[in-house]
Image 1 (cartoon, one colour):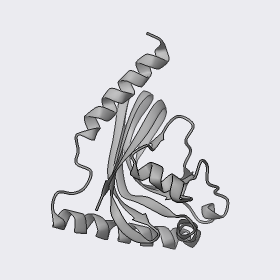
Image 2: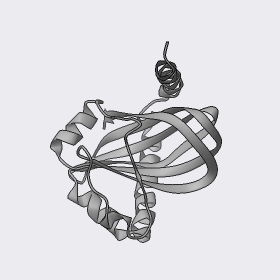
Image 3: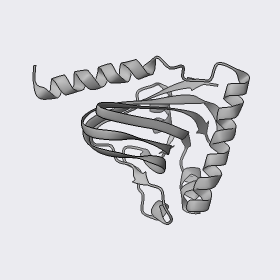
Length: 181
């Protein structure tokens, strides 16, 4: 078995452990709380860089994760729940799971906004055919970042650190699962 195959297997196993979490909150109160957190967090993003919201409105839809928790010591993982919008309408929920292996130590939380450029990209996402691999990149949200971001394969990603500290030089994969409202 090659090193890359072993690494991919470990990442898949770590991600599989995280996938056992339910995508949509089980109760109406949980769904309402997640939606409220998403709105509040998006308002914070708007204060940081109004261009991010303007960029998101240019897209066909988006998935917003108000808080993703990430941690690792050699092997790591991350998990967060989000709200999905298509042409401004709340259409469902998503969960983000990530597995990683490599030199890493620490823990952090962040929020993530994924903007879909067109219907084709949004449809891929809704069909759960959407994964981030080693070639995916995200832009750290800060004042003025939205002016220079471009869609890559119909997708643009913004990340805003919330707290914690993590040092990492690791191979990781991110999987996002969508569930209709």
